[in-house]
Amino acid sequence: MESLHFEVRPFDSLTPGELYEILHLRIAVFVVEQTCIYQDLDGKDQQAMHIIGWHQGNIIAYARILAPGQQYPGHAAIGRVLTNTSFRGKGIGKQLMRFAIRTCQSTYPGPIKISAQQHLTGFYQSLGFTPAGQGYLEDGIPHIGMMYTGIDEGITP
Image (cartoon, rainbow, N blue to C red; front, side, top):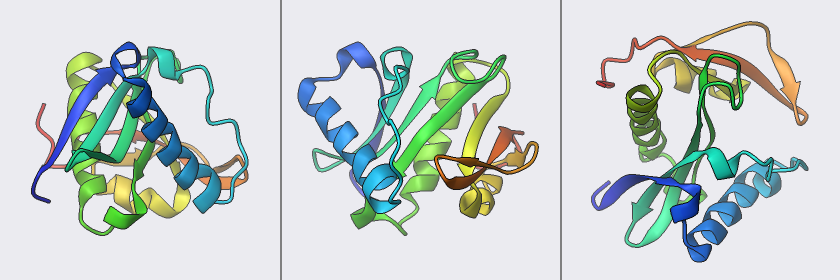
């Protein structure tokens, strides 16, 4: 998509307007769209790196990166991955994840772990993640742990 660009921001550099837009998108996708009542504000945002996908001055994609130990012992984590519903089906999610993986690899060399919704397993496998362990319910939605193996040829550190 033309004019799409990503940036990495620490929590303290987010403006109140940007934080509001990010939280609005997260609630719209994870709480409203997925009809899942859960506590999105989990106390980890302040230490996270925030990946923001911008298009024409609007946030249309988002993910956060947590340092090893903040989510999983010994592993960095990518989570809260989303694309605004109006922009889905255009490959933005794949671009977002590739950017997040490169950022994660350059900042925290080593394995990357995610908690993937099971219906998105194929999407994450196409990016080089492999299932790790058995499926489980997280907030009432089937999930599976996945580890980044670096197989996707579209990713270069």
